Amino acid sequence: MNLSSLKFFRNLRTTNRQFAVIGLGRFGRAVCMTLHRMGYEVLGIDSDESRVAQVLTDQIAAHAVQLDSTQPSALEEAGIPDFDTVIVAIGNYIQESIITTLNVKEAGVPNVVAKASSKVHGKLLERVGADHVVFPEHEMGCELARSLTRPGILDRFELDPDHSIVEVVVPEAFEGKTIVELDLRNHYGLTLMAISKENEADKFEINPSPVTRLRAGSLMVLVGANKGIDKLPM
Image (cartoon, rainbow, N blue to C red):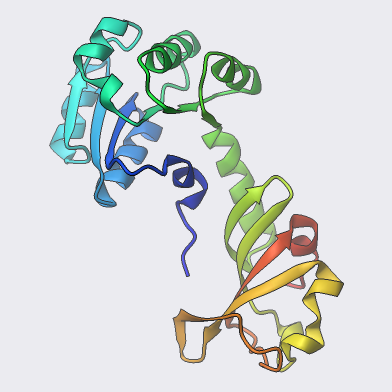
């Protein structure tokens, strides 16, 4: 089971398979590349001609154009009003980021995701209409800290600030114990959703029997409070 990429891309749900990414720095390029590889049609936009050319050379977007996104007329000419989802990936130039987000919302785009470099920046983006604000540097820092201190947690999908779904390596302390014996709900406030099949780590048994015995080193998927997840033996 692979929960990677869900944290950001779960916010891009749409029946339309077209996305526009404004700002082709490292973050914007990563978004373009991921969406393109997932089979979506992506339009890349940047004011820097060399970045636009590089995106086309690397073939990580179906189309890419150079324009000034702070100019509503330029966005209209590029067809931005026709997109269901636009990602404003301008994080380091706050004024341009805010003006662009405002322009995109006023163009009628229903779902605008904007990158913020600080909490104040994020609040301003929300004020001008951003539907979702992301903090890539903050989230990457949190992920790094978790991976260093909780190496048994292979992947995490945050449902909200206090609850998550996690893919976890079954610890030695759980070896040979049945699900009912562990009583994860009472001891940790967690519910076991799935366990990896024997000799098939990439396949899972959903809602396993309570008498199933766990094997250390295999995988399990849990849902519940982050406090309970942090109490698991690793």
